[in-house]
Image 1 (tube, rainbow, N blue to C red):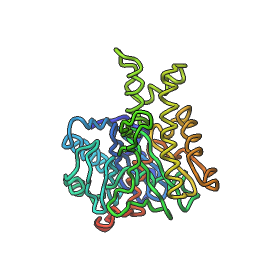
Image 2: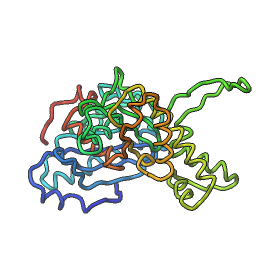
Image 3: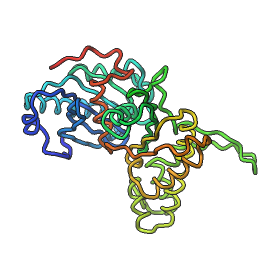
Image 4: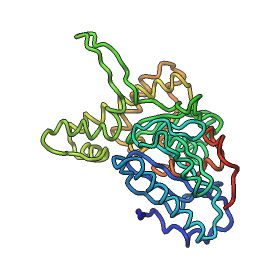
Length: 335
């Protein structure tokens, strides 16, 4: 399976780095999956590859592609003489402490032996993608200065993770990441209608596309969230409204996270989370406006330092600093 590369990649690049600790990271998201070899002491990513996820094809097809990508990376590492300690897989679903996938909102792997399939290739651990990215930011990125921070990811979906002492918190069932997928039910004070707004359907990348296209009936004005951001830069007032209100809505949820968890900082990743511009400005202003405690209101709100590769780096870094999902993993093995 071929994909665009961000650097020359292995095996030539691997041959030059000597005997270092390496693991493979895979980040299986709703839109694309990425993979690469990660040097565990520094977080350096080598041979990064990305391919479309194509989740609508079904879980079996996505899993076949992910296994193929992992096998390709293992072969490249072997060709470069590198010992791979294991495979870490971050997936955009709920994952419990045993590495079992317990939701199928985007990728139909629920109840499937995904971790076992990867373990047929090498020692492997499956983890939620937001916890993997949060771990990467804790070890190598914007979260390094903080003992406690909350990581938010905004892209195809929206979720969060609390990090304490460098460890992502998974919760009792692995579900301490849901932020924007369930309705916030209320009653309209004017007409009495029950309202069930879902933040992910208003402020995520696909939501920006849907809302912007709804303002342009009869045409497909955008296919990606970044198309809407580009329309803002071009002076499109409909795009400005969609993006500004989306950022403001996200800030309501982020303010609640800050009120509930009282972290030292908020670190925001994902494609939209690091996009900057009007979305970011609206989000930050709204977040501060919705933090009740005055002492918390001025907390640092930072874009993720590792950008779109945080999920790949963090998935591999599970082998450096295991999270709760690695409890049942096999001992680290040098292949």
